[in-house]
Amino acid sequence: MNIIFLGPPGAGKGTQAVRVCEALKIPQISTGDILRAAIREGTETGLKAKSYMDAGQLVPDEILVDIVRDRLAQSDCANGYILDGFPRTVPQAEALEGIARIDVVLELQVEDEKIVSRLSGRRVCPACGGTYHVSLLGGRTSCEKCGGELIQRKDDAPETVQNRLKVYHEQTQPLVDYYQGKGKLKAVDGDLGLDKVYAQIMEILGAHA
Ligand code: AMP
Image 1 (spheres, rainbow, N blue to C red):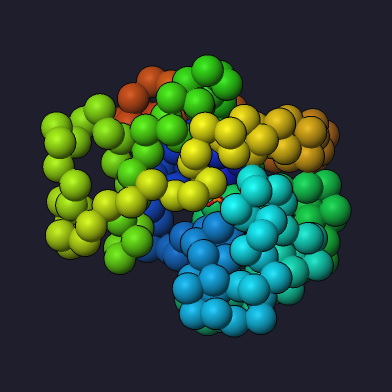
Image 2 (image 1 turned 90 degrees about the horizontal axis):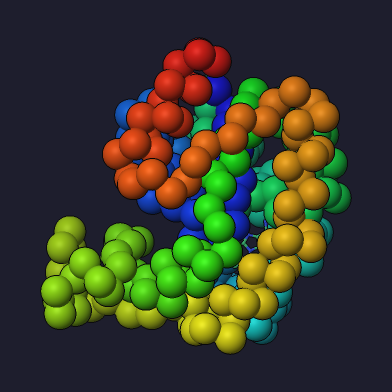
């Protein structure tokens, strides 16, 4: 099954995608992770993307479409995948039509106020991608899974979070109507707690299997 996870930054797309991908044995394709790896490795794509990402802006569509086309051509995508963070604009969704056949688009719905508190309290492990919220860390500063030192993503700073939400509403939310019009959209309440959100997602995907 070829699946898209849609929703504002901090809606839990990444966290849920990791779990669902493990259960379905398909790869999670996070364009944000791919771009952050490119920045760490100092590639040309990374150099181009960095200033946009730091400011909470979207990286130009052409760059993203090339990344996703290359990634979906790899053999591990043959039995399905979850696209996490792509498409984020209508032109990206239109380009995707020429690259892949999407079965279902899951929209994780979370209100803006919740997003601000989730993102400003988010801490991530750069080594393994683990994600935490400060309120649940009890003062811990290292990753539970691999021991890596946790950091705050630069684009999770409060000013940048507001900008990312604005960008989401202006450029990405139109995809809700886009996929609704294609009969592919399924909404999930992203504010029910990790296990309930996961259960809702698996129920929807079960119905599509
Ligand atoms: P994420 O980890 O999904 O929150 O993405 C972090 C940042 O990477 C975003 O704020 C954008 O700057 C960039 N990015 C990730 N995916 C895309 C995309 N599909 N289109 C444009 N920019 C993207």
